[in-house]
Image 1 (cartoon, helix red, strand yellow):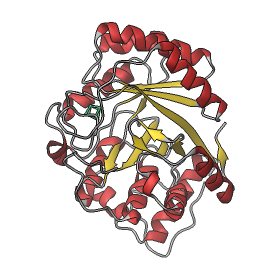
Image 2 (cartoon, protein in one colour; image 1 turned 135 degrees about the vertical axis):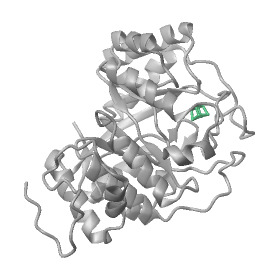
Image 3 (cartoon, protein in one colour; image 1 turned 30 degrees about the vertical axis):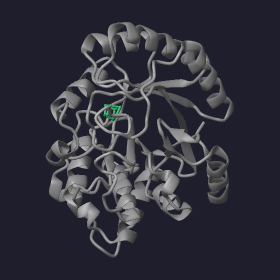
Length: 331
Ligand code: SF4
């Protein structure tokens, strides 16, 4: 498609025809962030329409299959054992209980069922159980996604054999800011896990979190890291920090919602073929901000009253919003 030339010069880097690039420089991405808002939205919306129906939103449901007691120290996370947040450590859910939740998610219109476990990495016996969950959920006709922490190549191959469709492993933020947020695993370890997932032929779900006190330059760096992966993640969740009492990030200042919208738009422009998920943080977001995120190219949401341990808008509220906007779940 041809994009009508705009009143303000578009950065030379902007892929006018939706070309897929993996060589984004930081100045190019910074220039996108700095575009006048109408230009940024126009560019994002134009590219969005090259690859997707702008009225459709992919719906995923996320279930915490193993909650709390995580040995990692991610500063935003209420499930870390390092912080007193009131989240109790629980055992891995039973297969039956997971399948009951998956059936309910399917009945409520979800097309993908995501399962999260608060582990540094899965133990072998736990991985057997998760593989059985993947097989069971797939047999219900749902796409499957799991997030289990770091994986070896061998573990990734086992998940692939079980039929796993997506693996979620976020880069979280820029390489420079990362050390402020997590000390118990390195950026490179995250990239290694993502490499194993990609090599095994499993779709990659990888994004980050904004509003953690990072500078815009860190949001630039996060998008650069994602957009310059050898293959773009099929799914890119962009989360707004949910501040949870007891975590080190509970007292920080709130990110301007328009900066969040800009981050979504720049993710859409730099990774035009990826599904961009408006992820955590929607509970405190106005309908207007969410609508702007959809205009900026977000085309996926988590559905259901809880995101692991933090609140999420109820299903009725989401359906009412999509109805108001004339949008519908992606088939
Ligand atoms: S984000 Fe994941 S790895 Fe980090 S503390 Fe929370 S559950 Fe553990």
